[in-house]
Image 1 (cartoon, chains in turn purple, brown):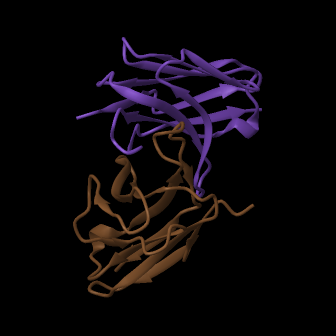
Image 2 (image 1 turned 90 degrees about the vertical axis):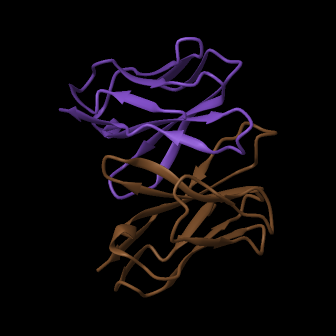
Image 3 (image 1 turned 45 degrees about the horizontal axis):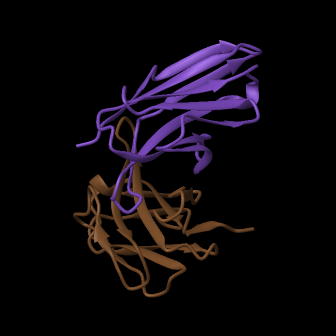
Length: 113
Length: 114
């Protein structure tokens, strides 16, 4: 059974700092990995999707990497802003499983002024 | 630019009552999903559908039923609500694994069972 772990569970950083969020998964037979953002009381917003054949994806200040062999992904946020405060979730889709995602429990990020 | 829309957004039920959550998507996606989110548990898949007229069980299907009579709609039903079903329910859709498999989520439906 696929297990997805995100460490740390919570993180507080001052504005302007670069930071890395970690995601690890136990089964390397994944189709893709997706990073989401969730604001309190809201739904999930897709940030980046990395297909299994890719090593990384970038969008603005966000960069996500994928190392299937070690079962790890990182989400790098450059020059953090208070508006980045949210919970960040990673999820993996196992090959051949009709896009069923297995989610981590998330990292709650607080960016302070 | 609606995307995935869930109704209702909030509901309070008494134990034993029934209700239906409606999910509608306007992106012509083949796949649709219902997840529940609980503190410390993450999101867990309840049921999913890979196309109109099809449904399948996910990780935690007990106590729920679903229907996909139209491609754009996916209904989640609770026949006899229990306090353990107090949760936030999310619907999602995707084009399917022949593409990227990227999922798009609704805003959630918060259900409380007393």
